[in-house]
Image (cartoon, rainbow, N blue to C red):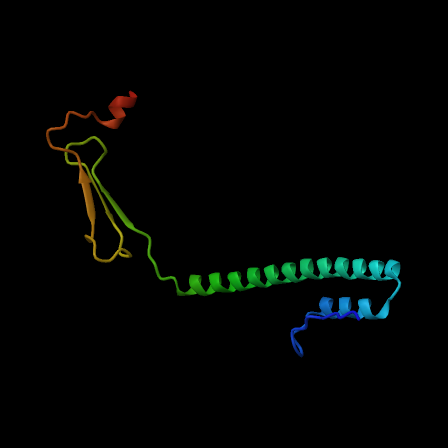
Length: 129
């Protein structure tokens, strides 16, 4: 006496390709035809998975574009304020960069030339008079 068991997932949970394989094994007793039908089902399963992945990726692309639009609409960041004073190389030259987005840090950052610097003016370095 030969016993055989089939694994099932329950009502409505079985994927279509498992149902089709069970149907082919029950319907076709000729091993040659059964092999052909099972091969066709496996090929269709591969195509179905490829299409399902492509559709999911398309949906993700659409959702990401919608999220970007929402973020851009809510984005109230301002560009950092850059203030230059003087000419590069002058003794009193300085630059100030402030960024209101950064919280908790200093409100502005300043840089400048040391008063005892012997740096020449940029125009003199390039030979432009």
